[in-house]
Length: 155
Image (tube, rainbow, N blue to C red; front, side):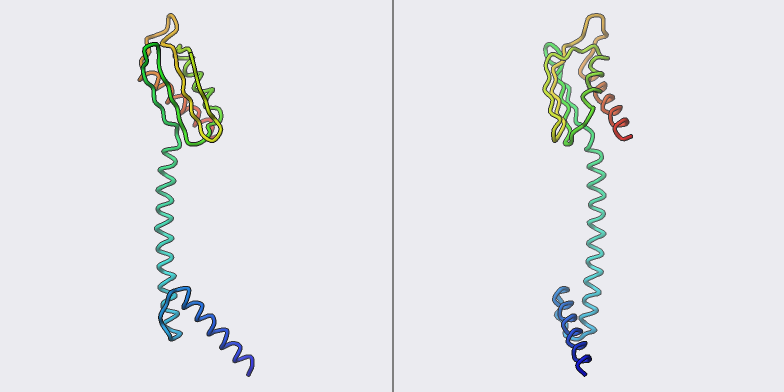
């Protein structure tokens, strides 16, 4: 007899807990369970929506993970800026090799690689005997260096 009363009290407590968790205003057991079922379906739908939003955000983040590049022609050369939200181990080497292949002398540079990657460099127009270079050519070479770096760093 004690066991049956104990089971009923436990069942009643669990139903009241279920009722409070699901914000149900029902009083019968069947209605509380139906409200709980509807609540679970709503939670599943919200999870699906959130998973879709996460997937979209990850796709956007993957596209945004490549560094941003800005090249500006100056009187005596080019101002080259490369920025990424994350640190890019080894990228600086690829960029400097690209400058060298273009025949650019780096006159001044500031680089930060701790939490993010930020390069700001002033490159002299061109070494003697090299082909003429404009800002678009420099930007394309920097983007190619970034592409080469990303292919190697993914491996």
